[in-house]
Length: 162
Ligand SMILES: [Zn+2]
Image (cartoon, rainbow, N blue to C red; front, side):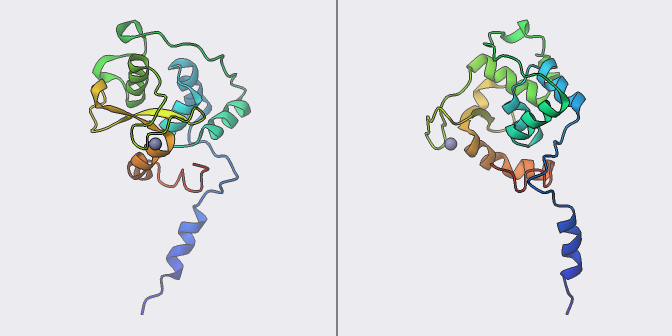
């Protein structure tokens, strides 16, 4: 019979420790998302498949100053980050938030807990279609996106706090 013991060692060696915050982005990428695209820490965390805490710690480490939360009232073509169909996945998500507002409840589990973070989750991949989004709490959203993100980001989220 074959032993599978040898294969396990390599897998465990590649696992990241949940207590070492290893952001999946560079300082430049973080700065570009935060200041360039005007994304929130939560949005950046969702984009890179990590937690807001990691983003916050990375910002602190890199000396990127948190801006004062500002009301977003830019819509459609007035918004310089909207680049039509060429816009990236995250820019589209931002556009949805700008057009539909920030969700304050979850359409999946029905929670309206004000301490929970809410996202607009895309349903069928039509990112440009604002009708193709459902508001979801972070927990439901990540449960739903989990399978896709697990493939994309490999084991980044393993052992994370959410
Ligand atoms: Zn929910």
